[in-house]
Length: 154
Figure 1 (cartoon, rainbow, N blue to C red):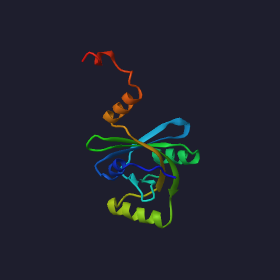
Figure 2: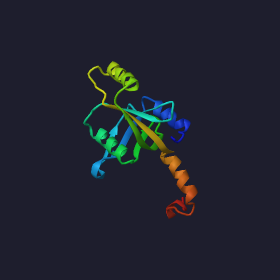
Figure 3: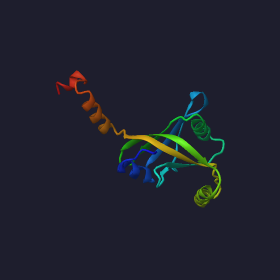
Figure 4: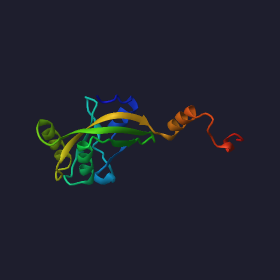
């Protein structure tokens, strides 16, 4: 069951100006991270990603994560500077059928010379805002006695 995402994360994923990064560890633990503007949230709570290159490093890392039930990381940065991190698990690679055909036609409409290798479905497992001000408040609440001494004299 996909974890629910906050409204802020849903808005960030829907923002075409937001920067989205997908990171996954492939065979041997080598991490592959790539900008992926196609990442979007589906109505069923899963994230969806169009992989355009059959032999890309991202494709190989996602296949590895699917086979070995590993997590992937999605980072989203809005134009306003809000940052979010979503941990998820690839659950399915759609490579045929009506769902694939619908996405393939959309990809070809936007980029006529581009192919579609797979439509990846990623289940969100956890999600957090990682904007510095938010993280600072969280850490200060968890560790109120931990701080730099020079801040006490200011």
